[in-house]
Length: 406
Image (cartoon, rainbow, N blue to C red):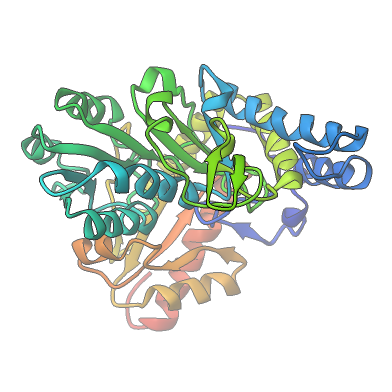
């Protein structure tokens, strides 16, 4: 397990804070904050069009982020990396920019019941606009994706398979190799929501045999407001921009416009320049640790938490309780105590968790619950945080079900 890194994170200076909501957004190390501050103080200018030295330096820093992201995810060409506002934007760019011009009646889109709304709602809209049909991979009894049902859904009319790389509720990492092989057998594209996957696991898009991967900086120790979409060149070349304006054009006349080369045609307007510098610093921090080490820490802490939480009567883990595909997101319910009440009592104990539907309402219905509490880990968490979580849950039980033994 990674040695305690709390001292690197200013927000975690309070020893009584147990931050277990990294699945929503991670804390930022001092090195990320300092890189953004220093760039803003010394190098800031708008990018791409300025002929003066400050703008050239800012442009170099911004484009260095594109190259850094490409290396981080194993992309062979940094011109396949679109910098944007985050995973939601990236998934919308694919769904709307590729889906609307390329889908229609007689085509099917396959996604899963376990998706974040960002990988369901855009495809719903595309289906409604084009006449394509949307279908979903169900869950097995142990709350993994039912891959037999998935393979039964496959056919020559399937155009795209959109799937999470790691569920933000169930904590599973679906086997992308098998999912991709099925999609390839019918000529379908594979689009992966990597918002939870990329911050915690080594990712090599060249080895995964997928067509697109979207993820966000703020879940991987970087700032909000920036993320990336990687896509294969053949996919990018068949996509339309979904946002129009400055910096994404080659030429504009009064009655028409032509687009800039890939990837700039997908980056309208002034980009998140300062945030790009922060993202580069976040990648530097993660790579100094090593993503294999990050993944191992995640797994060890998750295993410890699952064992400790198994001893709590009436606590139900909403996801698999073991397996090599289990990652550091644990959603749970406790008897008939509402998830928000559990989270409130935990907060009084200094334990920060998420409560609600986690932007996954279809999955909540599939699980038969209204909401769950959710603990999610990152490299600054330790077993002390898990112990505080367990103690806080037992305190909630004492308060809301005082006649039950704890």
